[in-house]
Length: 309
Ligand code: HSE
Image 1 (cartoon, protein in one colour):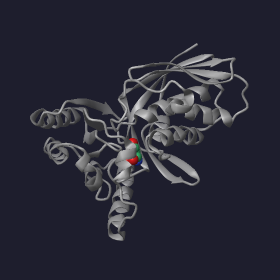
Image 2 (cartoon, rainbow, N blue to C red; image 1 turned 60 degrees about the vertical axis):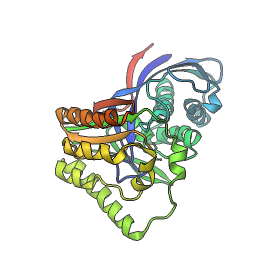
Image 3 (cartoon, helix red, strand yellow; image 1 turned 90 degrees about the horizontal axis):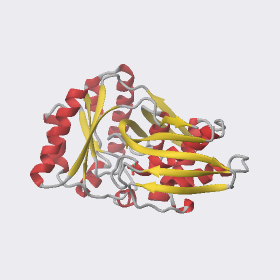
Image 4 (cartoon, helix red, strand yellow; image 1 turned 120 degrees about the vertical axis):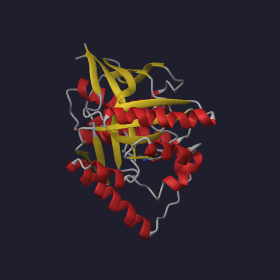
């Protein structure tokens, strides 16, 4: 295999109660990338369509993740990367993660898979570090593993794939403003009271349990975040109104997608996700904010191979 074309999906990080540890993979929103094996050593970004992003590999999230992987393997040749960007940077649905995860996934395939998924997550996190200054894995892990993923720990890095209830859907609304992850992280206090921590880890553990027992009612009661959401929601116009509308339209729960400004809601069934998406859209229509909507099943597979040569 000399060349691989992939679909690299958007992802929702945090999922309310799992800041920096929980994430899920979307199905129909994502970038396309072509990765090509060449004799010339090193990594070159040869094409970017859809967004203005750096072409220098050392300044590009896909480039730095790929460089990190190449440093860990004995390989004399190099790779060219083409990126067809559909996920807007600063949208909160894992734009940088899709590029970084896609690059390491593609190169690993072209090298006959010397690395496992957990190791690929480690390389892809280098892209996240470049994008936001923080090596978080809760977008790159679901992009690479599919479904819901949990970062059990960062030192050492250990990522787990969780069960996804079969009827679970996501609705995501992206108000057309940009919130950089670095900025959304800079508003966070670095300490948490024990009382709030107890609430949060209770909800996170209950959510993980509910994913396995496919208990939609427990999912609904666990989707809360009293730590990060109050600090970040002021960055998102109409946030509480959107949440209220989602709930009224039947969402199991909703929250900030990753570092925002996108807002996600989880639902039981596609019809419910469509109704929730419409209700969230009405809020932004009323307050006059442009938006994009995504309704998606949970993508169990993660990155998909579209073609090989
Ligand atoms: N866990 C990260 C954050 C996700 O909330 O900053 C960013 O997409």
